[in-house]
Each structure stands twice: as C-alpha cells, then as structure tokens.
Amino acid sequence: MQTTPILDVQHVSKTYHTGAGPLTVLKDISFCLTVGTTCAVVGPSGSGKTTLLGLCAGLDRPSSGTVILHGHTLNLLSEDALATLRNTDVGFVFQTFQLIPTLTALENVMVPVELRGDRRARAYAVDLLQQVGLGDRLQHYPVQLSGGEQQRVALARAFIGQPRILFADEPTGNLDAETGEMVIKLLFTLHQEAGTSLILVTHDFEFAQQAQRIIRLRGGMIVEDSGPPQRHSQGTGPWAPGGTASEPLQPAR
Ligand code: ADP
Ligand code: MG
Image 1: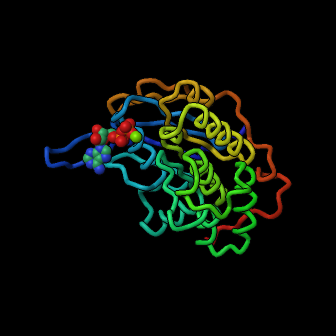
Image 2 (image 1 turned 180 degrees about the vertical axis):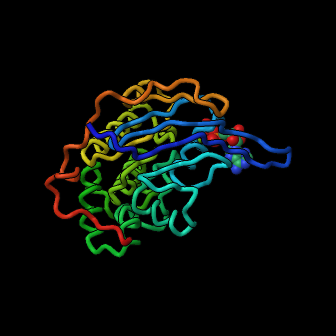
C-alpha cells in the first residue's frame, strides 16, 4: 500500500476581507491524503468546500497554514511555478463544465496538453473521448452537446494531462440523477485506471460513500473525518504506473 502523501493540508485558515470586515471561511483545516486515494468533501452550502478545493489546487492562497501538493509547499511557489504545477499535476472539474464555447469537444480536450507542446495531444484526446463514450461527438461544439455530454468532455479534458490529483467540485450539480450517476461512475473508473488521487465535493450521500474517505465541513471547520483508508486501489489501467500504455505524456517542465 502506498503511504506517500499527495496532499498534505496543515492548519489552513482562510479569511476574506470584505466591505463588512474580515470573514473567516476556513478555520484550522488539517488532513493528509496518500497517493491514489479518493476523498469526498461534504457539507452545507457556504461551509467552505469550494474555497478549500481552490486552496488545495493552488488556485488561491491560504491566510495561514500550509498546503503541500506532491511534495511542493504551495506557499513558497511563485505564481509562475504554481501555474506550471497546476498544468502538470492537477486536474479540475467544475459544476458548470467550463468548456470553451468556440472550440469543438476534441479541441477542448486537447487544450491542456497542447499548451505543453505535445504533438500526441490529438491522439490522446480522441482516445479519452472514446473512453467517455463520445467518440462520435468529436467535432461538436459545447452548445451542441447535452449537459451530461459536456461534463464527460470536461472529464476527458481533466484527465488528459494525467494529473496526479483531480479535484471535482459538485460535478453532478447541474445534471439529472441518471446522468449524474453516469458521470460519477466514469470519474471513479478514470481514477482507478490512471491511479489518480481524487477529491470530490458532492451533496449526494451515495456518491460520497463511493470515496474511501469522507470529510465533512460545517462553518469552515472539519466536523467529521472518516480518516485514511486502510487499503486502496493503486490503479490497474494502461496509464497506471507500470501500465501497458505507450509512453506517457511528458510535461514541459
Ligand atoms: P461552499 O462551496 O461550501 O458552498 P464556499 O467555499 O463557496 O462554500 O464559500 C464559503 C463562504 O465563503 C461563503 O460564505 C461565501 O460567501 C464566502 N466567500 C467565498 N468566496 C469569497 C470571496 N471571494 N470573498 C468573500 N467571501 C467569499
Ligand atoms: Mg461550492
């Protein structure tokens, strides 16, 4: 079993300075995830889930405390170094899909690896779109796709860079129950095949229970944490470490 941390959050707090004075939305959050594990973050609206994901993914900085992502202490990195780390190590899936409307499904998926100048981007993107069941929608624009299809394109885009860790912020929030279930199933399948660590924010108890660990936030604090799993999958698919896929994409470091 892997015990290497992928994400180590130590005493993190976040205070926004608003017109009405300081607003502390996260208070002394600490937890550590090991490589390849899955974790659900649950809690009422406004409890700080999105803020926490943003800090963990290096999209924002904490007011105090430390976030260590794959051995990198985020507080110590410049904006440029953070951007590079996000491009190579982090995937993000949003509730509102966030596809680029002027690009086709295929082009949307290619964007993250094209930015690295990898010429195999197209073949990988086609492969991933086939994996998410959209092999016949490559040239469709987002507006020509259903919500579930758009989110599947977003999943393919999030996985194409072979991130070490994937953050999904209420990825089924805008989908009907059946489509949501399909997207979650796909998310866990891709996680398992690629060995990607996964943090999923969800309101759905059944989806949360599929994760190996559940962290519950209320009022910016962890009020419940099921703790690290005793055992976890390490990824068995072709893109997993030691898998059978051809040479993995090399980030332009
Ligand atoms: P959740 O995702 O659990 O619904 P959020 O992390 O989005 O919660 O927000 C937590 C709290 O922080 C909310 O009360 C929200 O209004 C506040 N908040 C979020 N972003 C900002 C910001 N940029 N400035 C001020 N307050 C914010
Ligand atoms: Mg939120």
